[in-house]
Image 1 (cartoon, rainbow, N blue to C red):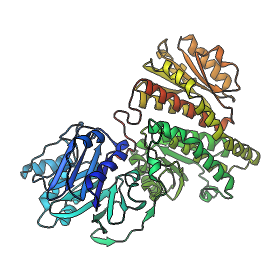
Image 2 (image 1 turned 45 degrees about the horizontal axis):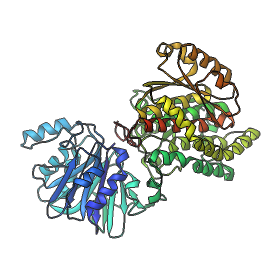
Image 3 (image 1 turned 45 degrees about the vertical axis):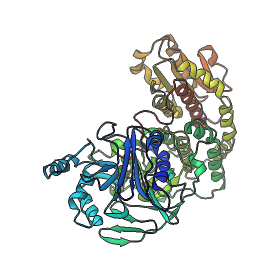
Image 4 (image 1 turned 90 degrees about the horizontal axis):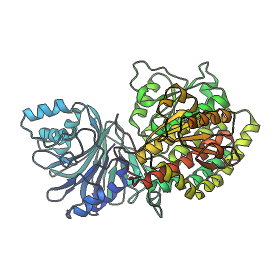
Length: 594
């Protein structure tokens, strides 16, 4: 999950690359480095964040260069393991996102041939392979070197032998931004928005040779032509603005996202996706697969689709699907991925397509690999999300699932009208929750003193308990676990005591009485309770230490309002504990390696 950048053009490359790397730090931030091609290759790297590297780095003159911000896989974070990596002569420099699975075999062979290594990384074999194959033609040496590589990679390569930037990919994302008299490549779109909105998506097996005025793309030795796409994000979308953290900014952007979706649902006359293959199929089962927060959104989707459409839904962790010996296809398989580049999801998509499933992608990034793999795509249109912890993308995924159901098979027109009317009211209800942030902050002061927290819910809010626990653990470093409330009696009760608070999501639906019973059971074990309830529920002050009230809405839409409140609770808890909210330790935004 590293971030790579390459630039060639009329500007000083060092300035461009450092700015782009800051935009990519959500992909990794345990070390970073830059290599600039002038008369020679000048390299500077360290086990620091990009801002610190910039303050220490001497000024290197040159209009071509590469950069890297790292999330460690092979070798711990260190100066030696930071990218870029160079060959023995120092004339070839490489940055890499991915994993070279046969690196040890290659390294042993290269050492036996006299090459010297300075790091523990898998990446370092690449410049040495290029050096090995260099016989006066730099481009040919790169082509030969990548033939030896097994695994995944997105590479940006420069050399003193030729003033050209070479990039290539297999299984890791890479986008080329075409500018005027300059071109820039990066792992993700935010890094290029300061310079262009015109992009070319590189596919697996393609190599691009880039100068300031030309982008030449090859595959299997033949030059190919590729279309440009236009990115509708802007630079302001990737700035924090008035907010202290990207996470808080992205939480506050959610009312507008909900408004857009509600308006789109009202305007649509036809389903957002074509499900004719289900209508004519005897195997009506759907499969949803995802990772992390997207998996929790999928659990909400399972509830909605089964409850409203009467279609059975399997939901799987993509990281498990792609390692199963036997794939069980479904008529429709729905992949949910914020970035559209999640490695486990992409592998599962390919396997399910091969098994005969119609694969749909729900993703936030137009033109991503998931979009290009899928038969159909439903874009969440949340805009760029730069905080590692998912907030607006999670809510946008849930909204996409509402959109799918409400514009698809739902025949109950009365219920459909009721849900759409409630959706239109949601933005203002979310703003009321955001306005109540000071009270939620007071609950966070209480929660921040503990080291273990349970989250419980039932029905459609059981996935929100899982998501609430995930948000808290990933940014505050408090050990938090989410449970279906009825499952506490099947083991987790043994952990409840005075220093284990429980956050209980109480929806005013058919699960309410059971949840109140569960809370009383928790209280009998002396655990303090923070209850998340509707503002028209009068009961909970009698049994909970803290009560967070959210505006009443239809129970099927309650995951949205409950999620916003729990996001704020996690954010303020992490802030009180002085945690690096946007960059939690050991985590990165886009998991592009297995």
